[in-house]
Amino acid sequence: MKKTLIQNLCSVIILFSSITANCKNYDIRALGADNTAKIKCTDLINKTINQAAKEGGGTLYFSSGTYLTGAITLKSNITIYLEAGATLKFSSDFKDYLPFQNVRYEGVFMNTFAPLINAYKADNITIKGEGTLDGNGFDWWKEEMRIFQEIKLKNGIEKPNDLQKMWTAANKDLKVEPYYQGIFKKQFFRPPFIQFLECNKIRIEGIRIQNSPFWTINPEGCNDIVVHSVTIFNPAKDPHGPNTDGINPSSCSNVRISDCFISVGDDCITIKSGRDSNGRNYGKACENITITNCVMLAGHGGVVIGSEMSGGVKNVVISNCVFDGTDAGIRMKASRGRGGVVENIRVSNVVMRNISRNAFTFDLFYDRASKPEPVSDRTPIFRNIHISDVSGVGINKAGEIKGIEEMPISELSFTNINLEAQQGFSSDLAKNLTFNNVDISTEKGSSFEFKNCDGLVLNAIWAKKPIVNQPVIKVSNSKNVLLNNCFQKEPVDVFLEFKNSEIIEGNNFLSKVKEPIRKIQ
Image (cartoon, rainbow, N blue to C red; front, side, top):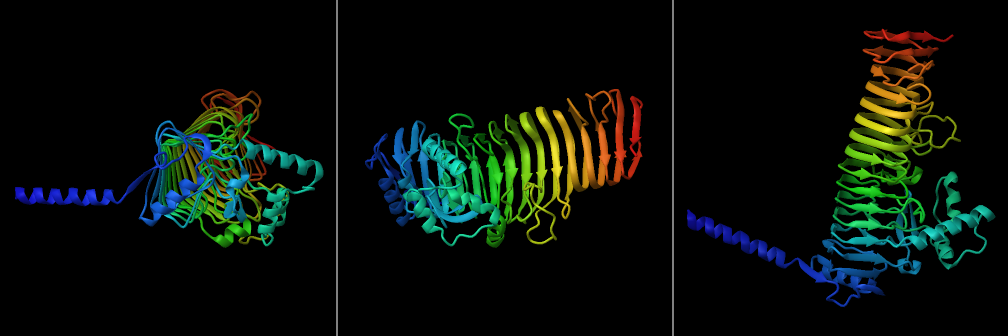
C-alpha cells in the first residue's frame, strides 16, 4: 500500500513537471528590450508573442523598468506578467496603432486605430502582476479636444489630416442611425486600452492601469472573463481624460469583476451590448455578470447599464460596493430606437457618498427628442430589477425613474434603502413598482413623487427629516396604489398628497401627522 502511494505521488510530480516545463517564460529585458522608455519594444514584444504562441503558449515577463511600446496583439495561451516596478508605457505616436483594425467603438464596429492591447478569437489570455500599464493618453485627449473645438467652430473638418482621410476611406460603407452620423464628422476615434474581440477565458489581475486613451478594459463578444484586484486611474479633471470608462464588458458572457479600485473620467463600470440596429444585428446579450467588493471614486457613474444595450443585458448581480464621489450611483439608460431588454438585475449592500447627480437612475427616455412609436424591436425594455440594502449621504437626488408611454419600466423594487439627499425620488411611467422599508430625507421637495404609475406598492415608507408644509409622498395620475404599514416617526404636516389617483391604504400609523392623506381636486 505505501509503495503504491509513493509511486502514484511520484507519477503526479513527474506529470506536473512535464506540464510546467512546456510553459515557457520569456524575459523581455533579457531578450534585449530597453527598460528606460527610450527605445520602442513593439516589434520584440509582438515577435515574442508569436513565437510563444507557435510553441503552445508562454509568459512574457517584464522586470522593473519602463518599456515603451505601440500596439500589442495577444494570442492564445499567452500571459503578460509585470513585476512590481515594471511599467509598460504605450507610445503617443498615433501611427504606432496602424494598420487599422476592426474595433467596436461605442457599440458600432468600424475600422480604426488598433487597441493598445488587442486580441481576436484567442483563448486563455492573462495580464497580471504588480506593475503598471500606462496608456499615455494625454496626446489622444488633446487631439480629441482639438477636433471637437474645430467641429464646433466650423461645423466640420475643413482640412482632414492623413489619418482622418484614412479613416474615411476605411469606413465608406459604414451605416448607423441618422442621429449618430454627426459623430463621424471628427473622423478620428481613439482606441480602447484593452479590447479583446470574441475571445474566451480572459483574466486581468493585480495590475494598475492608467491614462487610457479611451475606454480602459473593453472585452467585446467574449466569454469567461475575470477582472480581479485591478486599479484603474484616468484623470477626471485637468488634465481631463474624456470618455475614459473603467471596465466595459460588451456582449460578453460569464464576467466576474471583483475587488477593483476605479477612478476615471467617465463611467467606472458599464455593461453594454451594442448600439441600435448594429447591436441588434450582432445579437449577443451581455449576461451572467457579477460585480462585487469594488470601490469607485471619480466617474460619471458607479455601475451603468447602457445606453448601448441593443443586444440586451440580463442576469447581473452588483454587491458590496462603495461609490464615493461619482456623479451617479446605479444608472440604467436607453432610448427609443435602441431596442434590447435589460432584465434580471440585482443590486445589494451598496454605500454611496458625495453623489453629484442621482443615486439611482432608470431612464428609457435618454433621447429627450424622441416621440412615441409602436412597440417593435426598436423599443427598449427595463424589467425585473431589484435594489436592496443601500445607504447614502451627500446625494443630490435620491433617484429618478423615467419610462416611455409605449413601454413603462416594470417590476422594479427598492428594499431597505436609507438616503439623505437634496431632492427626493421621482417616478414617471412605471408599472409594478415597489418601495419597502425606504427612508429618504430631503432638503427640498417631497421625499417621493410618483406620476403615471400603475401597480405602486408603498410599504413601510417614511422620512426621518420631513420638511414643513411639504408632503412626504406625492402621487398623481396613477392607479392601483397601495399605502401600507407606514409609520411616520417624526412629526410632519402631510404624509400623502394625491390627485387623479386610486389609493388603497391600511395598517398605517400616522398619529404624528397633522393631515395623513390629502386629496387634491
